[in-house]
Length: 80
Image (cartoon, rainbow, N blue to C red; front, side, top):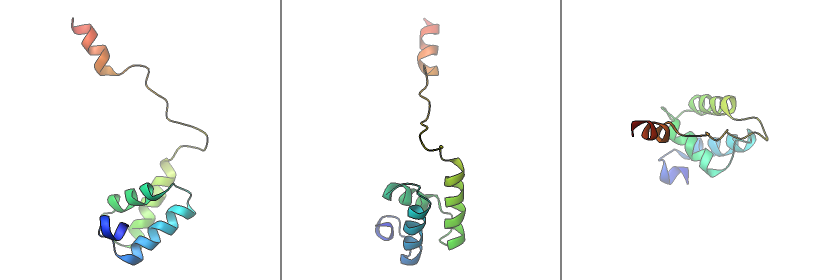
């Protein structure tokens, strides 16, 4: 899929798929996200992106907090 949709060479596509699976980062959508974030089609670039994704992912069992109120809705009420 990455070869077709993101024009990634086969060896890099295989590397992305196996590394996303090994790092337990997610599924096909995460693999496609890695391909989209790459600035060069090299194994080193794949590692750089995967390390960044691993570093900034949420700990298991935690979810992003939902905002109580958006700023846009607050500013609309204050203008009237």
